Length: 295
Image (tube, rainbow, N blue to C red; front, top):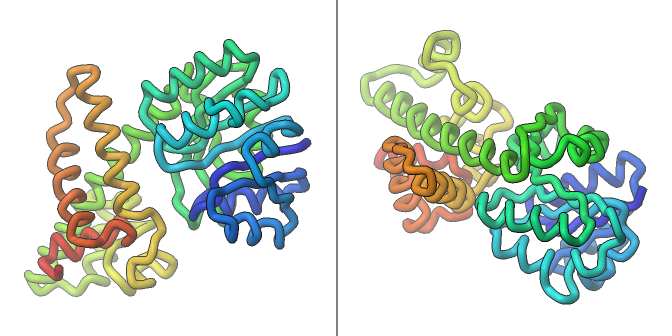
């Protein structure tokens, strides 16, 4: 099977490499030439244009940052959709707004392209280890086509429902993630000021009702979770600017259905402040330094 992969950033580079390891013929493209070169050195084939990616691919995967980027690479004249084979499977693993996602589904169907939206959770650690969680939107038929490929990249593949539902699940999941990271940061910061040793507090709370993923898998306090970004000077990981992007997607989604998400609104404001203070490319768990008054 020939796979075309577009978007070789922190996540996409690991995902493309895992597809190469799984034995697929992978053709890669990115706007950064050195990113292509790095994957070619690991067994992929480099492409000079988007059209070159699409022409021979049985499956096309994109892993980009914004809905506008995904629309551009798919819909421009020399882009993916106009140069893809009939009935190609298109998997978008970017995290984008639901309106753009569903518009792409509609256009793909009209062009005989089988599409699923399949955003991920798990960060760069999960991308590298092929332990990502995929939340997939699209028809049952298209989901079944995508599943064997996604299983080479993740440990949990869930069909969330119809077109756009993968993005809906990702938006809601990251809303919870952002809020919980703030809560964990506040708990640890208050605990330290009250004289609690962070390791002792972790031992207690990780086995009590405060337990959550932000604490036990991604603790924002250094010296507790070995592979957490907090132990690597908050190098991402999952960049704060990407968390802010996802939180804003949540705000827009809530407005579109008249839903109230007051904690989401406050969390968005805090991450906006954190990013605007020069921490856009810091891991999102670095928000603890804002909460603790260290920056």
